[in-house]
Length: 310
Image 1 (cartoon, rainbow, N blue to C red):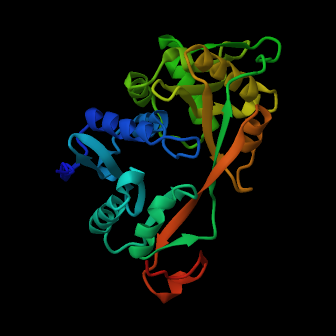
Image 2 (image 1 turned 45 degrees about the horizontal axis):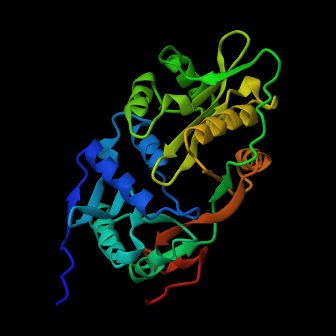
């Protein structure tokens, strides 16, 4: 006699324990063409403080195992992960999104490789946008990493507790304007799977942080992710970004990683990071696409494929 599948229940996000559950799902279904890694979930959740009211989040579980989650950024954008073995749950995630963010044009970001999500998106009236920025997923194995070669006078090393203010200042300069603060960076450092040995800086001769690279290691998959990396504007075009990324990747390899992934803009609006990653051996695996809800017939302009009834 067949054993019935456990019932699926859904509940709102309540804190760090639920983030770990989201990370566990992302790790369990991970492949080089996957969007989510434990590291970018931790970085995304903790890089800013005070934003929880802007981020309604919900998890779906079966028998205690997380099988889907949705993370809304109000007023109307959704990120999600759904176990391909339970692809039908994407319908429930999208229905919750519509209930939580009514009356706005909603958007959902997925990868072209996440084909198990497409039927639900089409059933809910979403269309793949043909315009605007997009991101590419890149990967490389960690054999044969080059030796970092910083400019004379610059020192590569892991971040220490006393470096946090300078590390934050460098991030705010590289990504101006930025909402990252000393408080939020301490929250990042307290999150799983942060490892201070994988958080690297390039220190200028005057002691300031000139560039940085944070790598995150998923020990179950032995895959590291770069998120984020940046260079202070006054120190760009010196090879510091390449040097500090190589240092972080070599540290990740020493910690057990066999592969690394990174996400970068794929369009021509912001090409420098993509060129950097390709210069250190990363290759493109897949790209993102924005799927948008159509509020009226005029909204079907500028999207790919037209309305589809699936």
